[in-house]
Amino acid sequence: MKLMNTLQHGCAIAVLALAALASPAAHAGRSCAAPQPPKTATVERAMTLAARTHQALEASGARVVVLARSGQDLGKYGLRYSHVGIAYRQDAGQGGHVWRVLHKLNECGTAVSAIYRQGLGEFFMDDLWRFEAAWVVLSPEAQTRMLAVLQDPYRATVLHHRPYSMVSYAWGQTYQQSNQWAIETLALAMQVDSVRTPVTRGQAQAWLQGHQYWPGMLHIDAVTRLGARMTAANVAFDDHPSAQRFSGNIETVTADSVLQWLPRAGLGQPMVALGL
Image (cartoon, rainbow, N blue to C red; front, side, top):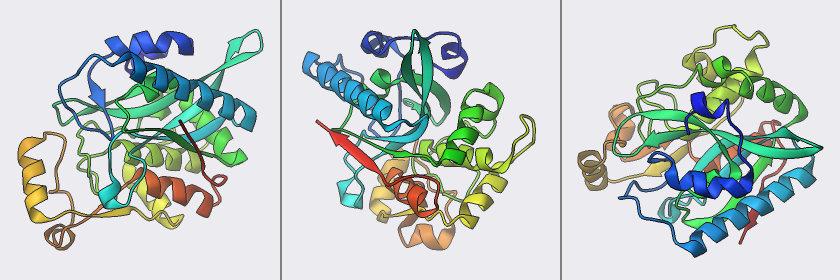
């Protein structure tokens, strides 16, 4: 469900497993293989992870967190998590709450993306490599600022750039991958108070650099780069500086680097992990 649709509809976590089965093919941080009907055990584990994450987030007292999942095996790059979104608590009436996740997903088989607003069930139904969640509770100021952005359709999507590469250059603007959108939007939230104050991707990236965000560095050899570029529409390397690209050093926004940066920059508490 894309943002324009989910702004008007809410679903309880128990219902989201069914919604996920019918949702359009989109992904982030995992392979884009031909879709297969999920196994019952997979659905049960995903929903259990969603329920336990919900309980833990409620107990934390947080309103906004940066939430990560492991959708792909990135162990050879020294990474544990593949994808982050911004999760926030929303009143559900009668004293209850639901948690929504705003995040960017690549449309399978294409080089474009869209912003989605989903429940925790959908977020963890996305073909996980490891049934594990990790999150950073944002600082009180960052939570207040980010919540205002999340609830405003304009600011929540104004920095979204549809052209997508899974390994887009962290300081480039030709493409934009999922984790890159998340921290650029956080940078927007931390810079402005006015609903319509313009912030460009360049300004957001300058703010991130000024607050000591260090991208992940993936070492990808020429053969692997060539194979990925020829077989996957959602992978491109031409936005990276030539010297780095030719040496196989691909500087991109990784989920792990985001989770490590937030506490270091004073923007959040130490990371919490929860696995099954």
